[in-house]
Length: 367
Ligand SMILES: Cc1ncc(COP(=O)(O)O)c(C=O)c1O
Image (cartoon, rainbow, N blue to C red):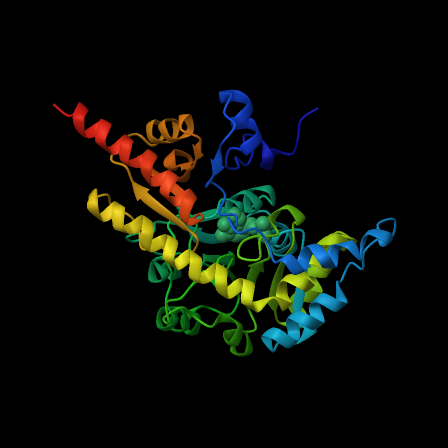
């Protein structure tokens, strides 16, 4: 028995190293994980209160279309509730979009160093990923435009981009959308949108009104701190959402996730606090990187991609032994970089202490 040709040789997704695994393997008690861009401040306390009210409904299937949550999102974002789809994480919406729109031989344009699920889902559908190199860590929109052909079905823009943390600004994006041929669906993945404070960041929700071939992806996994519940959403023209619903699993978003997301959405103060703490955390880390003369890409999300100047796995292992899990840049296409999630002030200090030791040791080793 052989699996279908499209998935032969496909890599299995490698997540950040789990906390429990590191504790077990290294015999450490006190480990911090700054590897998967989770929220170090947890989630809104309102979520926990609200979840309890859902426990008695656990034997019942959830409402697949999540009407209450869609209504709340539509009011918040001023969009048509028919133009919203929920997913088991935005990961699942990436899968749904690929499943609904890609056929064998189609092409999907994406950056060469970006969130890996766009490429994987493209390959699973038997389509061809067309990877366009980033320019100084930023999506090269004109380069992407040049690679669009009659076969192009989807164009992915990760904004802020994971792993670089850079953004495409509003003038560049609007100009690009004007020029793009009508047969291409553009997906803007905004998993980290709520963290962005740069005024040049596009208001993509408003762009939806003008561009019926646009899909915007958001998630409750990052600033809302609900990664374990798996819930994200897509915003698009109702015609696109109708197509996506054809390939959606019937009960894809569970009851607890829907209830928690509703509570999280209401707690705007929590989101504001996390955004502010994240901004301070970025300053705390960048100050030291500047002192050590380490290169980094300008961060707009809740993570920083920085160059250690040494093989990425060396830095990764060094930090791991000191109980700090980061992401090695090796698998991300940056063989001397690490990606670190911005943590609490204390977690950032611990990371910086360990990285400082690494930098000093490597400096001393130099001939
Ligand atoms: C850019 C980007 N998109 C999507 C996701 C998936 O998020 P979710 O937890 O909503 O599936 C992530 C998670 O790290 C991400 O970084």
